[in-house]
Length: 67
Image (tube, rainbow, N blue to C red; front, side, top):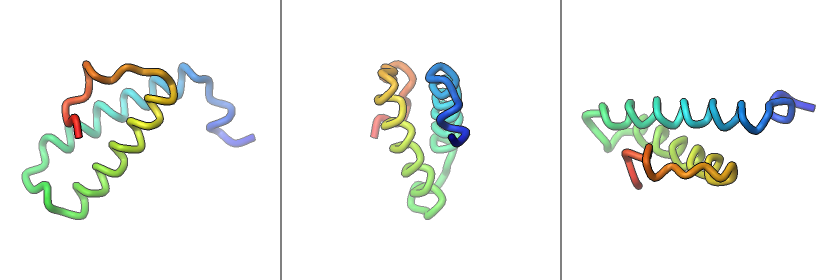
């Protein structure tokens, strides 16, 4: 059993929401959206949206990127 399997749903939800919020701040502060770094951040943003959706978290209130 790996660490993710040992983590409770609530812990995963908390960590994912925190990371989602932090990542959006970085994305919004990026001056140049046409960089590899921004593309990688956006990829993680999409991954976090999938994780949060699978946990039935409604992100409409916290999603500042909406992409």
